[in-house]
Image (cartoon, rainbow, N blue to C red; front, side, top):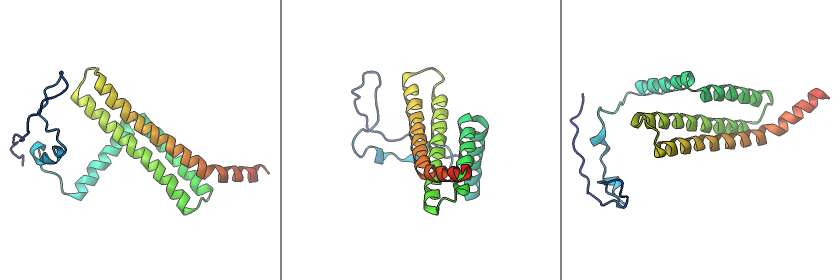
Length: 167
């Protein structure tokens, strides 16, 4: 059932930016005063099975439409295969897995943010570019961090295993 949308009570504040007239309470506790239920068109889904279904739908969307996620899937399978082949101890395995999970999470948030920006504006806007570029930089940071963790943890046992094979 749809709730009737109420007009939020916002204290007008003069903006220092001449391009926008702000009606947002910019005080320290201004954000705390905002009631999120005033902005929701539908009730929040409390069914855990439906939540899982929506999360899976998001993952399937990523796999179908995002080449970077498909590349990440192949990389994750390869890296975790190396972890098992090298018989890395549990703590190091979990660190590698966690670092890959961080990349998956940031890539997912990056894609979601890009979708929201595209929803808000179809025109090329400098702030849309900033939002997308900053989100992409978060993914890049997570990827570099994961690569360093993986190289530090898997590099020595991989070199040892290769030296045993070569003789």
